[in-house]
Image 1 (cartoon, rainbow, N blue to C red):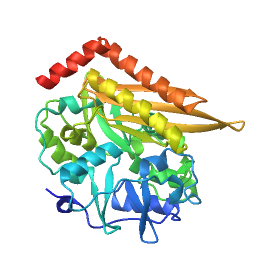
Image 2: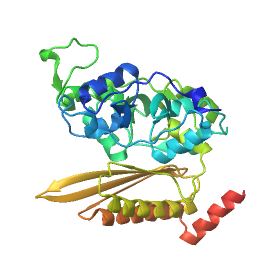
Image 3: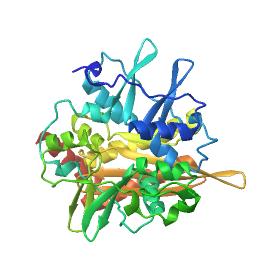
Image 4: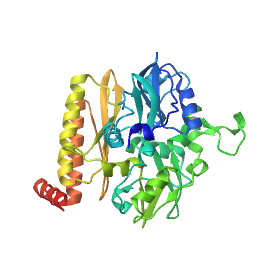
Length: 368
């Protein structure tokens, strides 16, 4: 199957000078989380909703170019399997389809779920996740999104998953400067506006789709094509599954688990050093657990008396649960090295084996 058979030909885009308020308005209207930035007829980058929501920006004055990142592209004649590989390697949710330097379509994770999948129980693809209760404020949900580098947070009430809050639900909050918000079902007006952190998650949550851990991957893929808010719950633990989790079953990483780095904005030499550290770590993790998912790295830069201070968070889903690590410091390469070391130690501790044993286990699993 070719990319041209699956892609959406209606391209919703913006320019680099488009205010973020307009970008988010288009995203909400069209139900999309990423948007190509096109300047002078040329693709300049991609804007992701999660990036906008988790940054302190004025949506009226800030422009799309403030948060856009470079993006991989794909040809309409490429195989769907190539698109899956590129999507996972890039960490994107969608890829611009380009022909003769012109964007002619978009292919997303959801589009690619239509390819033939390896079927079986979805249990191994589920990731444990943090959640909020209906009475918790939206600030807590936003914090979980930022800290864990995710786009959705389950809402749990008395041991049951009752809803889901995602970045799309936070657009209305963000457009009012994160300080004032009009809950659903109430007429707009100054008298209705209340502080964001007084709004409960239960006010804006959407109904979830609940699955069993033994549900077939093919059925879950069909559900994800229509609804991203899928969760599973078992004895106090909440799990979610995303389109990318399923697509990763079609992807065989070369040398290590896939790595996605968000908000890394250093000089090329420094970025190359950091990427080398993370790729080396991903290869180590691959030997311990070949079935691990994408290693998501989120970078934040803080300014303190003219000096840069960095924090880096890692999030790695595995069959034995979600691993999260957090490190900070003044030297970003040292932070990356410490983060990789912390993550590896946690995984080794959980799996209860040394590197040599992990390597043998990985080889045995491949042979099986």
